[in-house]
Amino acid sequence: MRLLVTGGLGFIGSNFVRWSLAAYPTLKITNLDLRTYAGNPANLKGMKGAARHRWVKGDVADPAAVDRVMRGVDAVVHFAAESHVDRSILDASSFLKTNVTGTQVLLDAARRHGVGRFVHVSTDEVYGSVAKGESKETDPLLPNSPYAASKAASDLMVRSAYITHGLPVVTTRCSNNFGPYQFPEKALPLMITNWIEGKPFPLYGDGLNIRDWVHVSDHCRGVDMVLRKGVVGETYNIGGTASLTNRELVGMVRRIMKVPESLVVPVKDRQGHDRRYAVDCAKLRRLGFKHSTTFETALRATIDWYRENAWWWQPLKGRGDVKAYYKKQYAGRGKK
Ligand code: NAD
Ligand code: DAU
Image 1: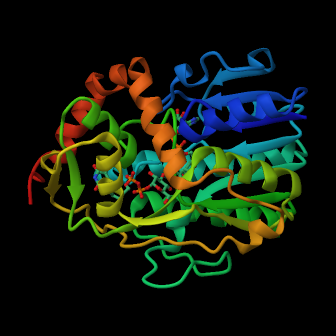
Image 2: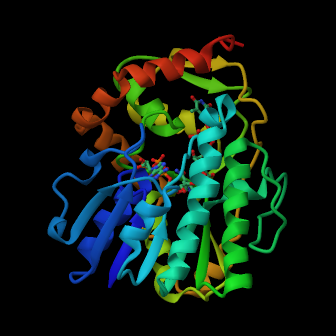
């Protein structure tokens, strides 16, 4: 199989590329990635099957670049996106270009080239905040952040490509991922790396927002299952095994890392901060999906990975553009 993966230098995309090349000895992957602030070739360092992988630097919103890489492709797995909610609150423009226009450019090219399957990797955030129960794939989309709104728009473009043009699409909507190679601006890698450095972790608001945590390897296995067994035109939720308030998460990581409470600093809340996400994964389980690890085991392994791989995250945290982002992010925010 010849696969086009988009965003394969990012956190989940690189884990997917690494996992897939090891799992399928004849698989070939073209990886279209613009290498934005979040894209990092070091994420693929030392991977098995590297000779069957080719990174092409390019923008998913650039029709000519997309057309070139789409030739001869059997299937597309589309991860490329602007993915950080806090950045979308500061400026949503790149979210619209990459997440909405980029998805549309890919769908059009996939149709022109007769691609056999298009897997669109989306998020549980498109359902909005759910006070009780679990979101089903048929629930209405009620996104709240600019990031979530751009992902919901892309989901609807994917749906329209299926209904109008018959493109063989499948969509996944996953909950909060964690694991190796996650850019250290997201809550868990920020918390772990700050604490390794003896710095505080900024806890937004009252810390009672609930997220459902899934190890990235299970997300990758879920995406692969949908690629191979999912029903065309359908959407599949992919959830985790640990529904936790941020306070509970902080408490668990503090206990494992033996960090004092003084390194948790409450700060002003994120604007429009969704209170709770939860997805019903029965549909994916009917395809045969099972989680491969427990939350605590995967969390301990993740903490160990960041402890052992400071070479990977330290240069990212020290970068000028990352420092400039935090300056903007905390301008006028500060402590509660
Ligand atoms: P990430 O920010 O770590 O990586 C995004 C990748 O996309 C980077 O390599 C970046 O260079 C690339 N990219 C960005 N704009 C591009 C463009 N215009 N053209 C080509 N490449 C571009 O993101 P992630 O956390 O790995 O998320 C991957 C996908 O999974 C996203 O679609 C996201 O919405 C979805 N998702 C993420 C999570 C999560 O918890 N991180 C959960 C559910 C769904
Ligand atoms: O639910 C899936 C989504 O999960 C993905 O679609 C997104 O791409 C991904 O970034 C993630 O979004 P969240 O906003 O849930 O993740 P984040 O790691 O930014 O925050 C997790 C929780 O922690 C959230 O309630 C906000 C809080 N938080 C976050 C940061 C960065 C803090 O309290 N302090 C922080 O510094």
